[in-house]
Image (cartoon, rainbow, N blue to C red; front, side, top):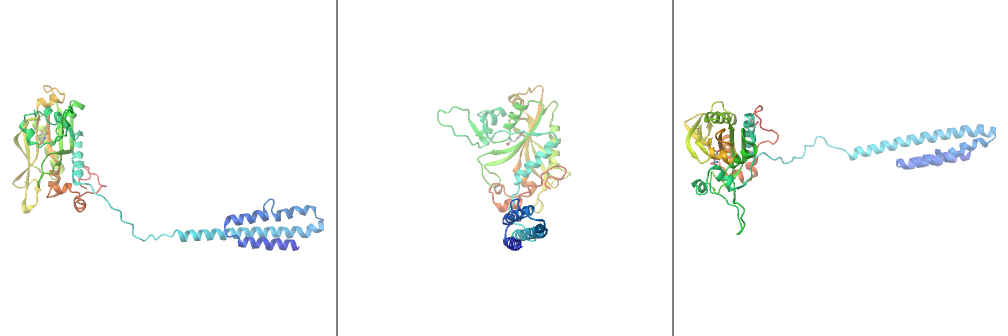
Length: 360
Ligand code: DAH
């Protein structure tokens, strides 16, 4: 009987001292495992006399139950302690304010490009693109501006450097988006409706000019296209873009080598109190150049001018962004001043569309 009392004392002590689950499991195996000390003792019952067994049997069973219960209680205590420990470690103050993350804004030029793309897409125009380093053929010759033409001088062109002996055709930084007309005609043929927003470059710098600025070109080629279609398209565009019901456009006869006839377009506005309002007042502001595509330009684009006509226009994006959003100085557009960007920038999460409001 002393042996059983010893076993009891030993294992209860070991269980009490086991301080993590693996140690407790080792104690269980040593006592109650297949080859555990108590299990072996129970196997010995078979070799005892019936009298001996009558006493040892119940005592061993009681010991086994007691050790089993002690193991279970200790395991539960260890698990509780582990949970307590985790809860203490993973404690989280949900009432703390979040850490601020810097949030960028969409530049007004990008915003306006998105807006005008949405408007023209609604009228069936898709977006075409061309390279910013352009051949002088696409930029000038194909647009009916031959080498000696005075318009070449007016464009203040940046030419790409060529080392002596480099006989590749001359390239320029495109001075307007009009060369994309040629590329679109060559790629897509007629009929076609495209706009081409993008960067253009001229050697010019003052309050209203920067050496890089943005234009959007428009081109529609089809049968029976006329100036009336051009006028309607531009009026629709201005109404949607400036978000006013009444806009009045004035077409002034003008001259561009790539259109015949050509017109510059002014929009009625007022400058009362230094504030610009579109659609009312007695002032006119020039916003774009346009006209019927010159037959030579259609030909350069691979389109037969006896079967197709087209209208085209070119609009200054920075200009209309300044008008719509009341931004006074063009140069600030490209200075990357964070205060300016935060003030005039737009939320990246609201994508302009015609139904939710363009600048929502
Ligand atoms: N490319 C002209 C410029 O940069 C703008 C222009 C005028 C484009 C008439 C056109 C157009 O497509 O028809 O000044």
